[in-house]
Image (cartoon, rainbow, N blue to C red; front, side, top):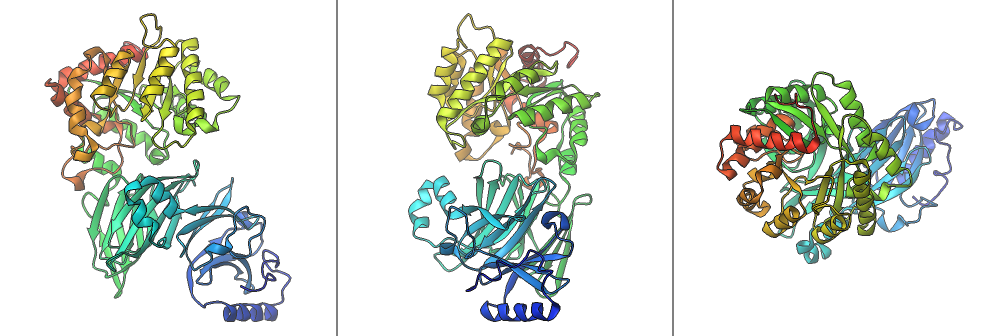
Length: 567
């Protein structure tokens, strides 16, 4: 667009008369390519306007905001933005996809463009507030592909979607590969951390449509398949459909039905086993009852993945023989939500931890320790954590992680609470901070557990040398060689019986021992803890009842749970 006069127009353009509006629209179409790729209606709450507005993404690189009741338009142009620290002019190009977050707290627009970026706009101010370079994020994560990708053009972003709460953004990209075949990928973007959480290839498919449910990502495009993933893009399935190319997907959460619209007037209605069944039904189909009561020591039960069926998740856990659940707190907010959940559930034993995960350490301030102290005073708070170090992704700077891990260790000592900890690629500093605080010495007055242990023999010896307990998840049942599940299983016999506990870390780490893969849920939950028990018992050469009784006894003693639990 050559003139900034359109940017200066009022938001709803109510001062234009109708003839003038039609003329302006016609002139703008002459100045721009006449292809619109996506559109969205805006609510009055998002804009403050009294009349209907419509967003449209154009080949020209502009995002138009139409007053469709008066045939008026104003512009969000990537080449006309002012006041942002990054120049958008170098990234102008066709805009293929839009997604809207319209909540009482914020109104944001995300757009996917041909240059491989996603731009986030604040709707009230009509300003770009962030630019996400997906290709650069991929280079940071996939070092072995760096040289190849550095020489390649960033693939266009062809579809984008916010999740319901605005915590996550999923973007689909696709382009012709080196051999001329189309190659697609998905990126899961953590809006809170402003960082990519996961990249995933979707093979020979240019993504055209994305649908998100609380637990599943559905994506389809230029192939005869609909691909489904867990929300964290860990588990994948593909469904064959009749359409040569898929243009639309609709999902009915209650029935598990999937409607697929495609080329050649094709509409498929699918109830594919293991892919479109509701997650609760999938879990129930593969549930097994533990021979003795279990305690799940680590469940992210206040995660958004459980928003719609948290009560059913607890009910299924009880049916599977889980006697108590420790709800993990990873931030002050999530620990507060965990406390509230424990108070609201009166028919099942829920307890919680209060702490800040190393990923979130950068958000700590002078009020954090006082807030954690108040949470820790609650009768259902059984540990300080999840705290620790994670130098693998460094979502928070290492020195900031160390500062707040050390602070939480000292808080646990002050309050005489056990420590619930996380460590990844930071073993030396982790051990040093604990040792300096006296954890692991004979005079140490509080116990600690390293949850979700996935390390090697040397790392295990370091953990045991610190006097820590060990939490084992479904990772031990992972049969993929690169994940090291078999190696982890071989180490379990080296863990003293009075230091071994089991957990799901739900909604993550669905046990891959659930077969066939089509029957495997794409969200983990406590009802699947017996599958972890089976793998642990096999690795120890014990019966499942014996392993259940021992791990439960350790958990009860460690978290100082009431004697009535599991009896």
